[in-house]
Length: 331
Image (cartoon, rainbow, N blue to C red; front, top):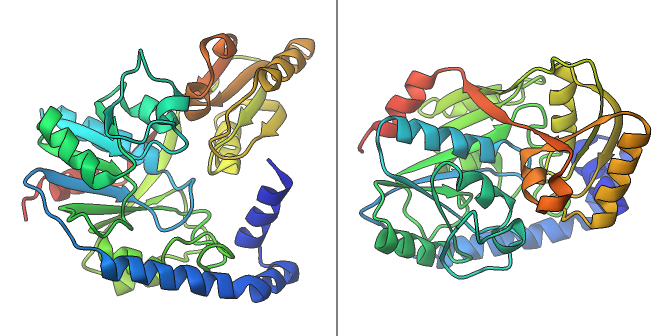
């Protein structure tokens, strides 16, 4: 992880005197961000569609469990023989125009890493402009439901259901808007937009209790990250470049992966051949297995993937029946 990212994470998620000093200095930038956010909202003309639109979003920057939630919803709809498609912007991908993702022809460089995860489970489309993307999907595929990865803050789209995903352990950080905090919008305003609030992991500080009381008409659900426990007597070299690197390491620790070496990279980092060569050399010299996230693995090319394992995770909801019933409602 780069120095500037380490500093940013420290300011966002610590309560030190230094972090509050930085917030005081740069707080005017957050005011500007908020004013631009309001302007964007005021200028947006909401458009509705005959196809059901379900948005999965967050109010903070990365690492909340949004990707795992989308994958869970894909499986839920498919289990009921509902024709589902996924739309996302394809963050850091080169392709910007509405495009159907093809696992054979496209790489993470083209469409981003999340798209390559989704396309293994459902028809997946990317578009830098979500409105154009929705129209493209309806024309090309005519699904019953379109799942939009992100887009809670896109006020041009009329959503039939909106889901807000929150990382319970990290919560809302220092509670400030970008750039001095991790928030894209205030938690209260995001919850007003949402129909379902999914809390991934433990809310250790009970910081969400007040919101549960305030938004009693919303469906609050807990979700836990699950994965296959390690059953081999080996030591591991773990590396990752995702929005919540500490969360990945914690998941490995709690599932019996003995970590000897850890290397962290920026979110959505594209690994060079030198990066992977150095990781593999260290692992070979020290008799270590290599493990990373499935997202990171998708960003590797075919040659780089050799000898590297990935951890496949899923979400286990506190009340699957309530989630399913709520999503299937037509209102």
